[in-house]
Length: 333
Image (cartoon, rainbow, N blue to C red):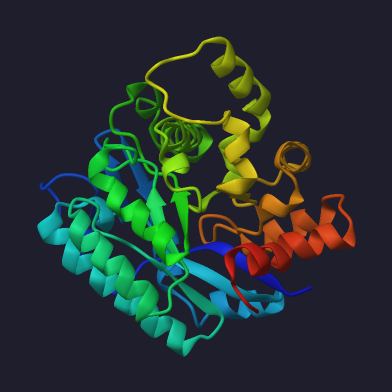
């Protein structure tokens, strides 16, 4: 069955060189000697194996996509250059987007996702418009925090308004939270995919929700990976507790579950648990679940093999693999 993958990552050469040139100039930076990316003093990620995979397309990525019948994959830049100081980030993001456009021209299976200079909102809005209107990109790759700042702050809202205006979707991907030593003291596994990613990204989307942004921008579409960062499991509790304990600081017009399905959708990336799939389907419905492999941070082949084991009807499988992306996001095979 043909498939559309909404989470597939890369680095371009210039972005790697920018991060390698930042030693001593703040985080993140890429240690050329050890081939590790440092996100903060306690947290680094070894890129000895990942680095070549992030930069490769012809040798392994495209053949694996062909073998798995992944007809389209939305490609997004791995985290880093979007949260650099504005004077570094504006040029680096533009170059990365141009590099991705060239890759998509070379490999028609690839679809573009914009990376934006977050500390220059005006430049970010202009770059997003260029990426969509001139380069044909279908998505913005947002990250769960912006060097400890939050998406619901007023300075970032023009970017989100532009996402809604352009009719694309944003993928809210995990980033490291440099303020939380509860996670950071035990290194990358806990600070990153083990727990920190889930905590930071679920907190980010709830902040967006409670700020009233999804009422202000009712057509906004936001994608979460990892089956919604555990929020489907917590849906009833979120609704219940927030109704029982009203808080004047919250500006959402509806209960949290209302926004799942209308504004918030999820992918399968980085979670190969059948109970997690079944919980998510029961909580938000099959129309709001999409394929995401998280390559190369996860294996495309293992993701598809797992999904083939998940109990679902033929229609549900078609929705997951391509029909939801076609009908709800306008991505065509």
